Figure 1 (tube, protein in one colour):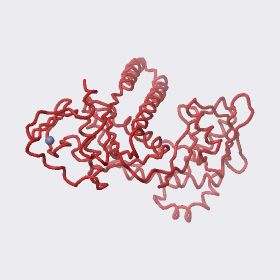
Figure 2 (cartoon, helix red, strand yellow):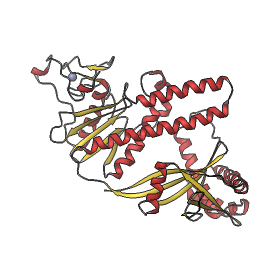
Figure 3 (tube, rainbow, N blue to C red):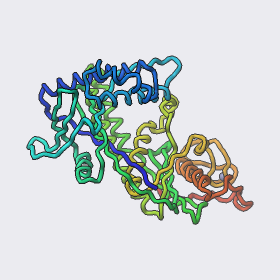
Figure 4 (cartoon, rainbow, N blue to C red):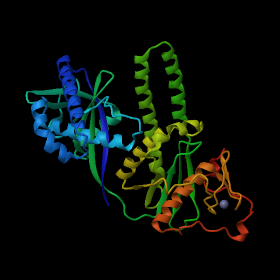
Length: 407
Ligand SMILES: [Zn+2]
């Protein structure tokens, strides 16, 4: 199976001259107005917007025609995502937008310039083209170099203004070949007490989970705690600009840690024969934000979602398919005994099944259930969990996979 993988590489404008910044700022202002103008049509049809708006927009806005088209696409995206998450009382109020350049209106090249070899040329409108020096962090630079070697295709560039600084978000794409045959299901889940939990189940022995592994996310907790503390101090002193800067720094640190964990998860998955990864689809989780906050121990859902995205593209690059299960399919995964299917109340760190006597790490049990859900979907296992055999009821509890990692 072929799949298009997409990554975003972020570079920063490096000491651009004031004239160029001014031109960018003006373009952003114009582009923002145009997106709003398109939004007033209140249509999610690109075709409709093009037929009814394009010619007029060309006369009204001083922008490159390619930008007029990407602004239209943005308006459609804004409307769609607004529809997805709106409450009854919310009004659409566009606060911020980035400018999308497609290959008709940007050029990115490597030069011998000593300041930085990377230069981005943008066509803003009929009369204006600007070239901007871009710098990258180490990891980002590697990706960009891969793209220059032809391993990735340059798709679009989003110009983002953030805290008075300009950034270029390069969207790179690549078509990968995913392995069609699967022998091992790798379930990855967030836990109550762990950032991530993984377990493997083989087609040949579907009843026996293998090699449960936990990522506690201590570094991320520590980073959060530390930055939270500094932030409160700065807020007390009303140093709001510093607070903003710190947010960016914290985000980058956490991102780095998520990449490390994602790499470890890929190494974990690759040790098994023909793996396929399965995770829970967390879409719509933002709406349950308040509820999630109440559960002290539960990790904030956002880093896990971010982690999922990183795991997905890294897995795809290795030819490993990633599947997501719907909410319906993962119902009760945390409360169900993976051995006998009994649904029970869970307290503390262990799952204790009153029916079959299983005692198991709580996060790992939920993870096994996710693997089982996919297995049923793939026909590796019967739809219903099997009833425990007589001898199993009341047997001495056993700790299976991952027990050595329990504390
Ligand atoms: Zn049970």
